[in-house]
Length: 258
Ligand code: COA
Image (cartoon, rainbow, N blue to C red; front, side):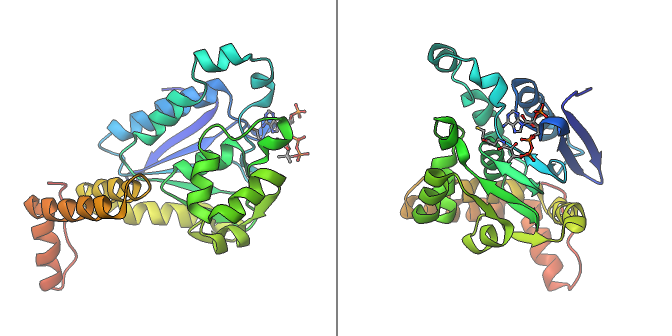
């Protein structure tokens, strides 16, 4: 599949998707979002891919939804097409883990896209923000909801109301990103995390993703029950037998996704 706005590669069981509209700082226009959904859905269905890394350029992961494209739209246009709803839902349906490797700007829809990934590894140059207030709108792909859950109400309000950017160090302190590395080590770090995940049982990986997502959507009691039942269910797999036997025999497990 040839993409115009993405560079897509699969190597050593890791799918890498690089947003590629550098002249527009990877602003998320409809073509890019459509291609992104196709690339992610294709990798989700491809047995050769066991983890996905989503990245941008050194200057920008993505500087937001494409303002030039949006500016002309009316309420009827955006409401009738449910602008960003189907894209959001399609990305959230991906069952394989997605790591966002963020360098430079991750603003508006770019910050929201990074937050839709399962975790974020940031370069020291990363800048996160929800500056939609400067455009006379609010975030529309989850910013007010996800940022508040990830960094808490105070910082989320601050970011959305003032439109200020958060640097990588603050983002790590606040819990928005899991690791910060020097710019030249960003891809190495993200790929090595993805490769580590690719070595695990896919069954366990998908179960963890479902359980952690559930934590954001349900009560603690329901979430704990969901987790415990998943834990129980994995005892029906060969990979649980292999993982525990390998530990007891002091060897590396050979998972077969069964
Ligand atoms: N939508 C459409 N185009 C965008 C864009 C966006 N969100 N963000 C950047 N671009 C375009 C610029 O219009 C410019 O295009 P041009 O060269 O054809 O004029 C190009 O990308 C480079 O951006 P520029 O603003 O010149 O770079 P900069 O280094 O001076 O500033 C930013 C970088 C990120 C601070 C600035 O581009 C910006 O504020 N972008 C919008 C951020 C935003 O509001 N995002 C939320 C959208 S919902």
